[in-house]
Length: 189
Image (cartoon, rainbow, N blue to C red; front, top):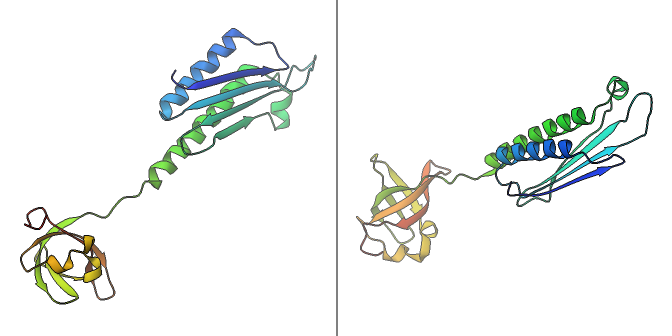
């Protein structure tokens, strides 16, 4: 286990076997999301009940890069769950199940949050004027581009036949080249 792990017990005697079980479950969380940097697990017996047994609450705080932490708290809330012979191992198991679900959701959101860039294509300058030009694409389509679309202020260096890279975007009148770079086959590199 490469992450920082803290385990604490409140109002109950620490158990080496329970601590080993928690370490194993944290290892599974680490395999689920490899960028986990730390985890704090707290197991607490809420009340000292002699007849029905203790009610256990488990808190799991997972630290991930770029965020403070993801927190899971599990305590029995339903009356049937509260009064049926509570078991600390069942509470730990349910808390880690919720933590795994939260980590999966977090991972999915992070995966969707990665921005994809529009593809860059190669073409050649077909026509050029004072403030605009046209690119001839591999498909034989002419794309309009404006002086401001050319990167690195290289518009004045462009001439007919120069190889360029471009990013296509839908404009008011149809597809245009939103960004234009001088291509690798051009002598202006």
